[in-house]
Structures are given as structure tokens and as C-alpha cells.
Length: 172
Image 1: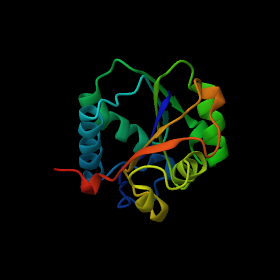
Image 2 (image 1 turned 135 degrees about the vertical axis):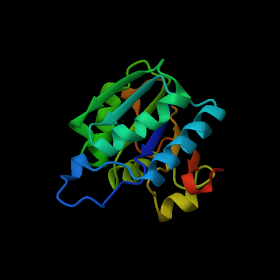
Image 3 (image 1 turned 90 degrees about the vertical axis):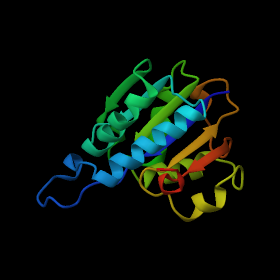
Image 4 (image 1 turned 120 degrees about the horizontal axis):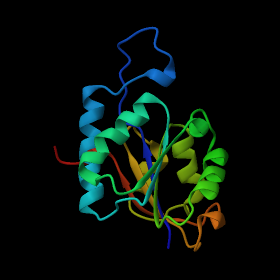
């Protein structure tokens, strides 16, 4: 069954005024959170076959923090298509771009990341559902399993939430 990892970019730096939103970097806490999340993903055996990542600097920096731990064997595609997109745009994008990937990761933005998980997951399914309903903090990861044999068959309210992980809950 296809597995989807939806990762919200880690904590960004707001200290530099005048930056366009697309050009905001991660702060030190965000870089650390992304590295901790990478370790958790590797320990759980969830390395993606394909990573789809927004072109915003903070998502690319989140990706860069993952790669030393996850390796570089997977295909990586950067796209502006998911910057400022809605959950319906994300779902269409996943259907179009998922291809043959068994494990697909999307590194993206809120509120669309949170809304996408709530659109795809069966309500109440899986550990972490209560926390997910409340908030999808920066650097958090939702892992969904789809019953469809292909990404083109990804349907609303069909996926099981396997994990919802927040970086603040992971060891240093």
C-alpha cells in the first residue's frame, strides 16, 4: 500500500525584515527539529522513494537537513506548484506526481498540509489523531497509508493515519 509522509517545513526565521515570504530561511531551532525528524524517519524505516518539495527556502532547508540522515538515493523534485496551494491542489499534485513511489514525501506549508491530512485521513484513525485535530506545528510529520494501489486513486477519507509526530516530542 502506498505510504504518504506529509512534512510541514521546520520553524522559520522572522528576524530579517523585508524578505519575501518565499525567501525566509529556517532558524536554528528549525534546523535542529528537521535533523531530529530525519533520525525518527530513518529509525522507523520510512525513507521515501520520492520527495516532492516546495521551492520556498524554508522547505528546501528542511529537505537539506533531512538528506544527511536519509541519504540521497531517492528522487527529489522541487516545485513552486505547491507554494501557496490549497489541500485540493496538494491532492491533485500527489495523484499526478506520485508515479511508482511506494513511499512519497511532500515537504510543504500550512494550512494546506494540515488540511490535506484531514481531507485524506479517516477521522479518528491512528495514534496522534487528537493532537492532529488541534494543530499541525512547524516541523511536524503525518504518515498516512492509502488503500489504493496507485497514487492516482488517492481518495478523501480513505487513508489511515499511522503516525503524527511533532519534533518537540523527539529526543535531542
